[in-house]
Image (cartoon, rainbow, N blue to C red; front, side, top):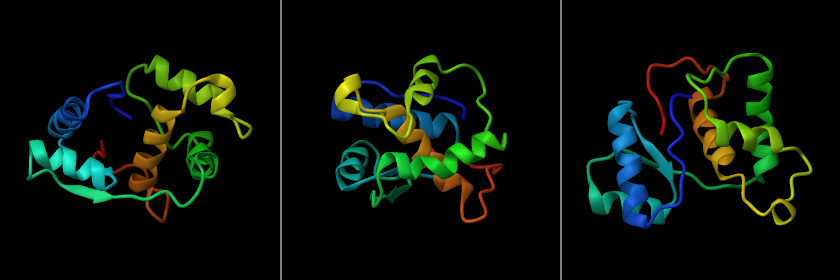
Length: 130
């Protein structure tokens, strides 16, 4: 984990933030759905993109990634206070209605690490997914 670019942005703003992060970290692609792709392509048609679709809940998606953390296969370069606070609060009984927010940063991290870990759960790779 090199950077947390999460925030509240207008569509063209978050697309610009994502594209800048992809360039900054020499990422090979950006993940998201059809709306994400259309918004990013409106600013830069050449950005590599992979569509993803959630078929499981956030807690279930996060379980294999939590195991990688427990095995010390994931390392954060620097401190990410807001993300790490979300990670600590994100338990199997997490209720975003009760806490008043969605674990958006955790979910973005889970998607990225799931993509990077692949079927063998190998995290160390040359490319970075933003």
